[in-house]
Image (cartoon, rainbow, N blue to C red):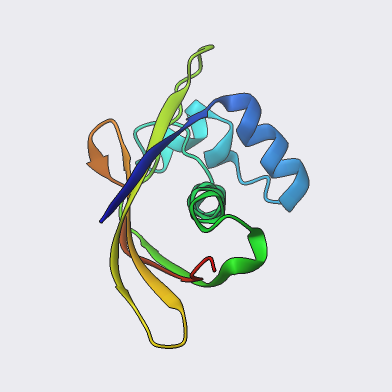
Length: 130
């Protein structure tokens, strides 16, 4: 069973807000000049911000924040965020891979940006709604 796609827009303003909340002011998340000087294609989203968006999608599918038992990902590609009003989009999809006897559902999650996977081995375990 495939779950409905959720799309999240990410702009530079989102990165600034996340930097303030997380304390991660690494210039790769706000300075094109610095990001390109270290070999990146431009400013990139914080990995944990990307993971948080995946967590938001899983929470929505699960129906409640406390239904998420486990969430794990590996970061494979940066999410490049252009310096314009539109930013970029992250699309999150998932497939139900099974339900255990104790009511836990395993989801295999996919997150893409501009058609490329940005996470691998993204999996979630959620309590099945009763």
